[in-house]
Length: 126
Image (tube, rainbow, N blue to C red):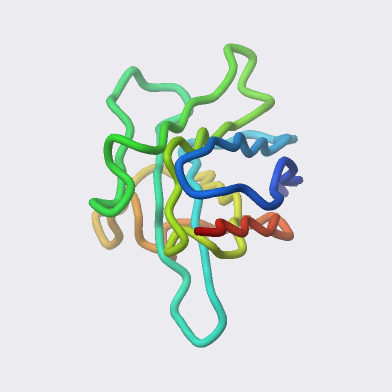
């Protein structure tokens, strides 16, 4: 079982920057960041293959502002939030998939992932 622990959340002003981290223990095939606000579905923000040199995937709403990457020893996943907006506020979750793609879910689909962290809150003020 993969264990994921997020950190780095907090309050930030719009236009600032924030970096989220996710400590990973266990094998992962693909990893992602999701976010959720009360009353809404959890949405995929960014995803990356752990062992493949494939460009990351981003939600349209964060392209050009957020960057996902993992360190070389694959123990930490990061999400850099540049120029965040108030609508980026939410509880950010780290997620991991241990299996290869089945074709049923896309990289930013919640169903693709089988392990989740506890979440870290990001609040962006205007």
